[in-house]
Image (tube, rainbow, N blue to C red; front, side, top):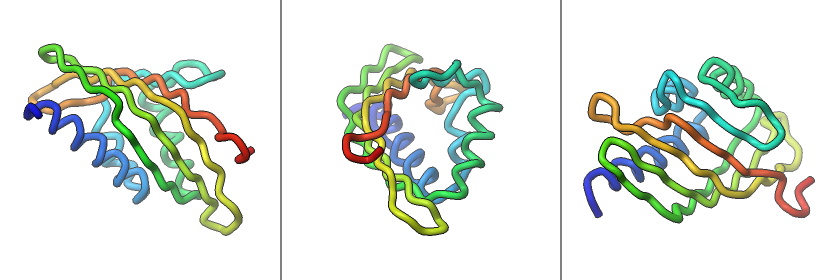
Length: 130
């Protein structure tokens, strides 16, 4: 496994641990300033909207599982396809909701670090979780 692939795997692991810990600042440090997120049925989301959405997650506990399906590195660019499962449980109590699906991230090496520059997230409510 190349150093770049290890770095991208580390980025994904850091993202998951930061998201589960509610560390918005750390999650935001992993995306480029010009990042664009695509999600089903919603307009494209840029970094300010993403930051606002991250802060709204403080009301829930996340448990995230990621299965990397593919990483391809093309010089200063890379893409990564993941199978995701996210269990979202209100911190105030109650049952969790599971969302699952795939994501495709485009990364760019900037100042020596890999950052997410585009992300298409196809995670939707899992069967039996609506």
